[in-house]
Image 1: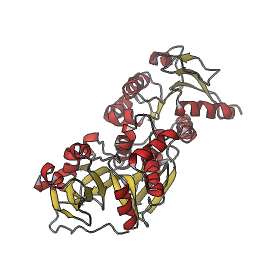
Image 2 (image 1 turned 90 degrees about the horizontal axis):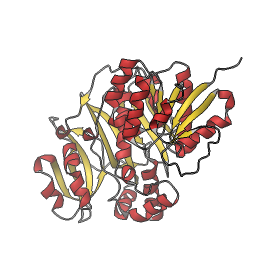
Image 3 (image 1 turned 135 degrees about the vertical axis):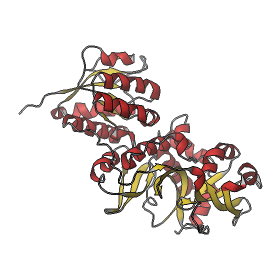
Length: 412
């Protein structure tokens, strides 16, 4: 029985777009055909001999409507305009653009609801790991108690190099750039923006809560050094840039922070550019999904999976929340941390009400105590500019509880 061919117009022929093109060429029996491709640079040599190329976004909407548009570019604003035009025109959209989706999520969901046109984006989070559909479908009837994830392979590669080879941050970043894991401007990755975008998408699929960047205390890895790696080793742990989603009472707490994880933690063994998502559920228990989080073919495989699901009539269900959660009030939530900072700097920058028991640790330059998440979000930029490093040592906790827990080192 012959299958009707699904026609695709593709935006972007970089790493991911080229990966999708190559996969479709290798699998003609799947019944997909890329008929048009819009790219930005007319001078770049392309490997797409049988598909017409255009150099304007509007090219995707000319020459007859396709069955689906796939968007895999790095410009969030241009991608958003494409998304609006596609959904308004009744053309399903498959996207890998986590920044566009995160920044415009509320508007895109409203547009999808109004037009009835499906929007799928599995490839936007963790590459080949099917975490979004797992949260939407398989665990939709359970109560998620915690998500902790490594969602950025670049930072995980750098942290692995720092630990394994005793490298400075600058040297480890240089190696990541040399091998193609980091861009020439790595800011989105190393400052935690990329992980925060993905956290926004995870929060929607898992909890039905729409977050913004201003709701997520974020601290990248740029100020971490060999002293931090040595401390982690002394504690029997490792440093990971962890995206956390944790219900605390009726609030959903979200963070993206360098975190000390112990040897029994599910993220402890995730090395180099790997990604992993650790889930804790009320009924289903604990689960870990891990695998390649980026790269041409892993990410393209997620795009291709969405194309198959679209052809089956799939769309994300509206997240079900048995206990609706609100965004966290950040000055009500504290986090046990370790800071390396010039003497007196933290005390000057962070008001007393936002810190508890911040006292010198084993080193003169290190402090341990509890900071409010508000202080990490509000004063983090100034502290990072001053070279302050931060390690989360435990889970977020309510600062309004009748009995405050004493800070202890993370159990490793």
